Length: 188
Image 1 (cartoon, one colour):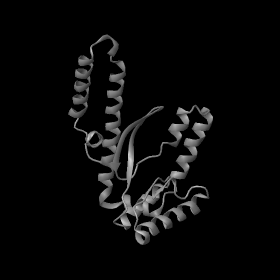
Image 2: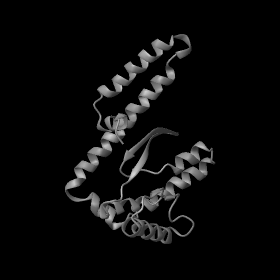
Image 3: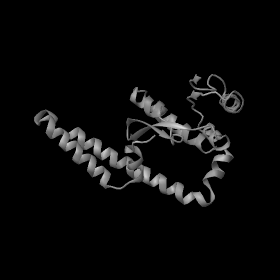
């Protein structure tokens, strides 16, 4: 089965309830292979409760007003939403973007109790470290992309371009950042 945006089309709470119940039913009763996309980040916690459920996401890099899709499918839930970034890329009016950011920030204060509990205790330093690694890694990737943009590829041979790209890639890898290692890893 392939389902796009399970639980969409009704109120947030009804949609989440339906998405959770349908997902749980498929995983525990139907036991069929199912791939679905969801906008409910909280639904990713179903993987903690049912062993046959797995979370995957497509990695991306956001910085300032850019969204760079990295075209890698990775294990685990996505750590952020890109809706507002996409709205920016679609040239929505700036006052709409700013108001969207404000409302999203207000709603983030109303996280579920399960999410808050899962981030407390012994795991908190590890969560903070991963967040710092990700932020540092995103800056490294941003710098890499800026250097690639500045390359004068029309003035050098294809072989020189490949050589320069390998050098730039090695510089990124030499940073020894866990987020970078995860992004360039050959596994999912």
